[in-house]
Length: 260
Image (cartoon, rainbow, N blue to C red):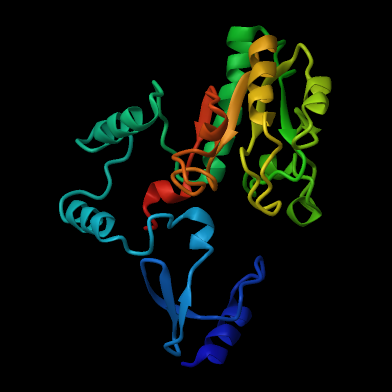
């Protein structure tokens, strides 16, 4: 099959939820990808940060092969000899005390939302079902129904209502607007340290530090979504390191899976 035939087959049988470039990739290694015609491309996208380490990194690939020959799945009904080592590695890298692996980045965001709400009720004392989370305009945190409920992008939320309540939107980079949105029922502020889908938007210097201060002053959880910006994508382990802040919750994904 040639490029045109692959594209026609995909368009015929696949749901049209995306608009990919008309290049059919066949193989990849490091920073390079090749299409089925043999043309070579430099991959600047890195699968939206899922392959920050490069395609088919030999060390990661070897670990995948070695583990697949021994054990691939236990479910959480049983313990295994790998998960505790992951926790230890993450602890050594970040200094955080607890970790909860999920299946996808969007699921991790949903779990962070649940965690913040539960903390709000059980620790902060917010009245039941009244918790609020402040998010930023032009945000992107995933495509589940709850997450698109607080999107400002019509492509993300149009025709998917009714939406999940409990979110307030403040202008990204505007500390005064974030302060104005805070109430006694605010459980968390959820932001990207660098906005991805919005166009790689770096906030004004001091913004993250200001968000952290708001959270400390008002007893609010600071939740940082590093799914796209984290694990080396910005030049540091996490993008929030540039302002030397310490979020209460950090959400990671994509590159965490090593591109597999």
